[in-house]
Image (cartoon, rainbow, N blue to C red; front, side, top):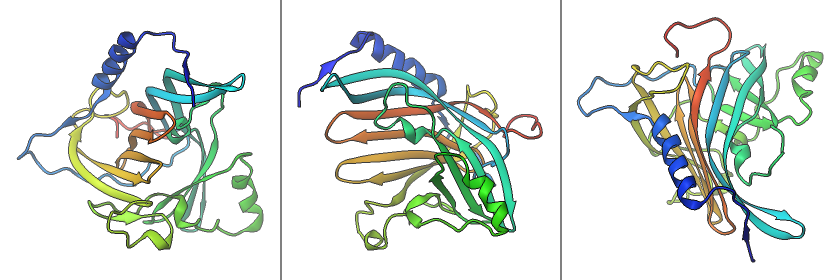
Length: 259
């Protein structure tokens, strides 16, 4: 398939811009022998007004006038909690935006609407709610929303290297741990240069991968804070996303010193 590049910046300028963005927000690994990292809780602060802002680069193949064009851009995407409801032991948050939307990026496509569902002490699930009505419907039924299919699992209730979650039952015994979420690595980091995040605090940052033959996703996740980096790469037609957390707001009451 032929491709035409429609980029306004030349290659050298794009490369320098990407390097500046990466260096500005990249976590700093804590030196060996330092005090152990605490594990943040809850896994994700589902509080009205909580906001995560991501910035990075995308490459995407889009159709224009019947032919494929490659676009490269510096993009910003905001994920924010719009409303939260409790149903017994279940928390449901209405969320606008998610960094995964930037895979196969299309200019002008609006942010999506999602529900993040969590039972107390349980895993987090992310499901689409295109018209934003599901959160309003459940109070009418007087029942808690059902826990979604494991394929919608966003983060398991606890993380350790080697653990897998999500995916179909048929792939859970794969020795390569593909076609399911797999906790591939963990490191202890400081996160400097991100407004709303305490740069002095040590944190566990997990790299969670979902690898398939067509492509792979890497989610860098810090318990108690959220996603700090999101990477998508397609192994065929060009579609690349690499965004990092550049700002955070906890929402609700003010928390001195950040999370």
